Image (cartoon, rainbow, N blue to C red):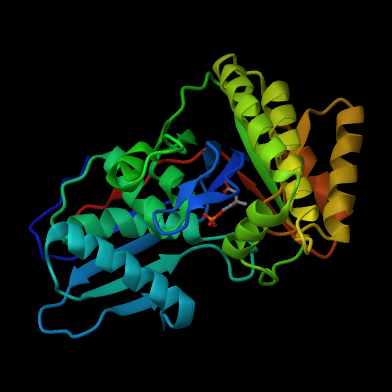
Length: 341
Ligand code: PMV
């Protein structure tokens, strides 16, 4: 592991996105970003984010560059709020220069907040001289974006919701991700990007509405706890069929909670359903392939690595206007040597 160098120098970190197989949906504390349910994800080996942080003596505000352009609006606000948290922990006030490069092709329709805040947590903690272990970095990344807590770890990661009635410091300490032991599964996620446009409603707002108004939310949250228990057992015995079945029902259940919200939140598009049909057909043809969808219309298909090309070809034919990517399990977030250049 690369140790932080001297405090105040530029530090660079890299992190990869993750896709949840047991979903995080619903917060119990928006400020601390405490989820209502445990979630479990696979970190991907594609589209890393590299972020550099350099405290800037004398500067009176943070300067944040995302993919070469100055950050503004909500994106800037979230990064500055995150840096404020790091500064308050470090007992420092120095503003910073942050430069983040995301390799997700523009319009790929894949969220970059998980890799983005995981890389920012690692780089900012080092730059401000906080010597945190991976668990503490996971808690910190959670404050930027919930799903970022899981990108600290490679392979499969479980994010603990934490004790449901804890408050304040105890609640914060109880909610972090950790790696999950999995036997040799050799999985791939084939990502069918059916629509790369921005989402109509943010996941933050959609979660809030679902928790507040959907009569299906509590039943789903309860069944998700059982899904997690079964998922862990399936991962231990490297049973891809079971992993896929559990992931698929968990995601469809999550979307059902949203469809029942008032007013309804619907991320699934006609092309999403066409891809789901094509995956059902693959299963009928004897190829184990299972779907999961997040806060958008794109479909991620879990399958054996050996079947990934066939699955990619099938979903490409089902959604001809879109693009298809293939990912495997990727590494956890890490500090890069020197300034990472
Ligand atoms: O971390 P956020 O606020 O972008 O929420 C992500 C929620 C889902 O992607 C829909 C599910 C998950 O567990 O990643």
